Length: 127
Image 1 (cartoon, rainbow, N blue to C red):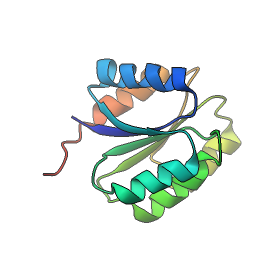
Image 2: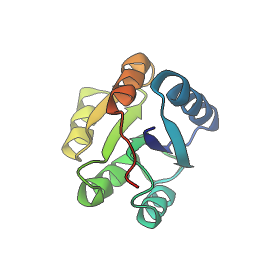
Image 3: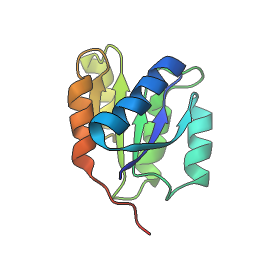
């Protein structure tokens, strides 16, 4: 089961995504963060406890691009990073891809594609 670390500051959306990832993608959310600092601290402390990070760009403090840049420099080749945001304009999409994320999805238009992408990861954690 693919382990997801979710970086999302809206509690209702985080709960909905956690349920959707489990139900539609067969993934397990292993942790959440609402700020970029909190996310990076957890990722530093748990480098092998996640398989994919799902990142919202606009957070309660900081932004998801900071997390994306951090992950681009530190994640293993087997780990994935995905941006899931509202209003994924071409400029923000290009910025996220330039930061090294594997994919960018718009929450309001591409949720089904996001769940399909996550289901396709099918990452088995290393033991």
